[in-house]
Image 1 (cartoon, rainbow, N blue to C red):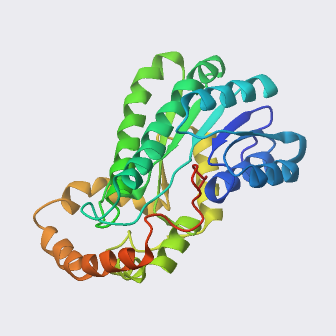
Image 2 (cartoon, helix red, strand yellow):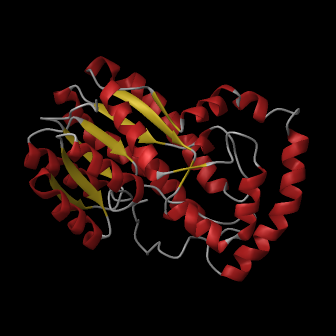
Length: 293
């Protein structure tokens, strides 16, 4: 039987689409109430209307600390409490280190690392009062880097380290902290990357198990909600991603390097050519302000 979240409130960043929207729906379906935080106000309003009185939304860019604080405080006032936080807002970029525009690289890091910091910082007083739980959405990329996605890999490794440090800092406050590590999820980020860059799809197919599969949003949502219910320290999506954590040293060792080098030698030049022809470093639905995954 699914765990009930009756009487509980979750705050979700990046709530307008994908994983964030799915978790919001699932949390409400299990009796909880949800604060939707992100951009794309039309999407947020539509989702909030769908969920009825159990949901409310606030527009905030996670790159803006003041806006994040205002949204989180307003959500806590509206619902009277915050029990769970899903720090989910994130984006990816295209291009190698030598190719990508500085601002595109910095934007990914600002959203995926600094945005998590701002979310946790301003949610902490509310989580302390409820002795709540925060789940940071990192990635399987926290464990294994992939050429052409340096900004994403760096940011997700950083998000993991940030969450691990924060976990130690707030344990005495009664706050529990977990880290979510999705592999390739069937969201706009993955679909658009495959459409934009044939080399990205080819590289994914060559990756070793368990890094070469795709998981549905529905399965991802179910695992996150189970993580909420059990306040898990790690949420692997799917569960086999845990192998990547335990084998991280091997994957980054001289033993595996010849394989990675051979794959990269064939795909990196093609990817750089595709990005140059594409003329942009993000997929097409990313506006000038931060979207939610």
